[in-house]
Length: 96
Image (cartoon, rainbow, N blue to C red; front, side, top):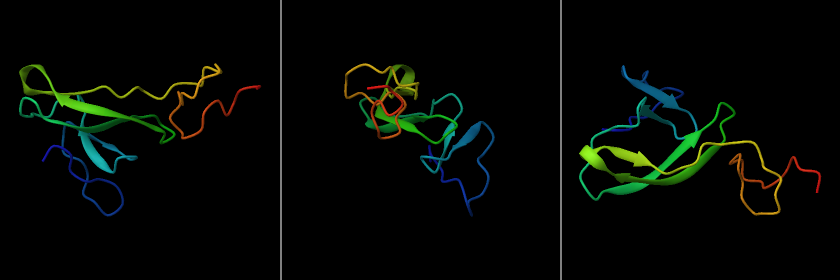
C-alpha cells in the first residue's frame, strides 16, 4: 500500500518513507508511489506545526503521483479569504 498508517501504536514507517502526522500515514519521501494513469485522490502538505494544506493528487508522467497542495506559508495579510498557513483561520496574525 502506498500510505501505511503511522503514529501512536503503529509500527515505524518503512525505509524511504516518513510519518506525516496530520495525515496519520507514512508517505514516500519523494511523493512517488506508483499509480495507474488517470487515478486521482486527495493529498496534503504539512508543516512542523501540524498545519496541512490539502489538494488533489493525480497520476502523472511515468505513473507517479503528483500533489497540487500548497505548502503552509506565513499569512500574506491581504484582504482575501485565503488561508496561507492552512490552520483553518484566515489573516489571524494581521493588523486588520
